[in-house]
Image (cartoon, rainbow, N blue to C red; front, side, top):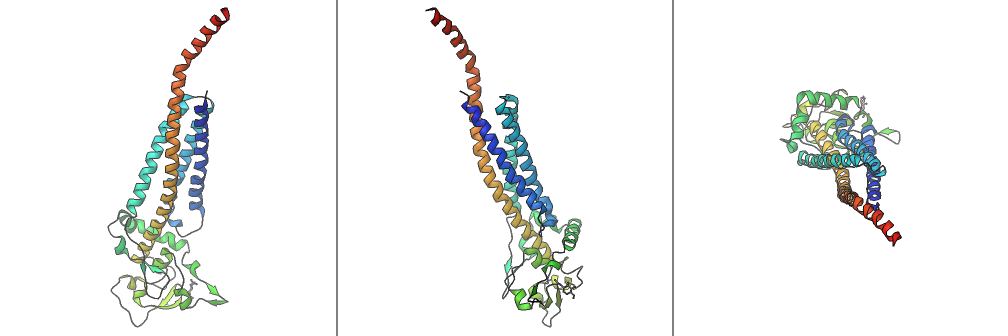
Length: 286
Ligand SMILES: *[C@@H]1O[C@H](CO)[C@@H](O)[C@H](O)[C@H]1NC(C)=O
């Protein structure tokens, strides 16, 4: 008789389970020691969405178990806004990361990043903003991302040829070394001596400093590296969000249908029971 109630309970339970990977993903992103440490704000939407899905699905689960239609209504109502927020977040994430990518460099395995490729985007304006950039760049410096780039191969420091074959991430490429076009000569990963053939139209070429506290942290290539790194992480988060959205939408539609079905049965029931209790004795009388 109450099949739809069981269905709602089941759906809420599955929704609850679904919130665990979202939350876990958010926490994992925010705790792992990687180069996007300085961009932690990215993980918050995921954690907030994960927690709200968890709370709301628990409410819906309780509502189905205890046949509490207030909790069920609460679940359906709030879930609507969560779905809307999720859709908004996905659109936003794609809209702000629509432009720009790394450029391939001759004889280098790593890409290099140019701020021009990201110019005019909302995210670029945010990152280039002086006060904001001061925070991000000092955070990158403190994270020792560049210092950790040093490699020892067979007891010896890495040679230039080995370095050129490395796949650097956008932040390492943009912030820890001078752009290749400046013609600096490799000494180690973060020390480059000025070469004879300086081709300096790029302002980053004069920004480079072998002082391990400065490096290319003020370069445009560093800002571009950050933007490229942001783009990568936002796209990853968006993929998770799209999968979650599709599953949640299916659950939501099924949940709504089951709830309406339940209410129909509730409304019919008084008649049904009344008929039963009236007809039963009469049949016995016969
Ligand atoms: C490169 O050499 C400098 C100076 O010797 C040193 O301070 C720095 O840590 C080295 N860089 C890396 C990445 O090992």
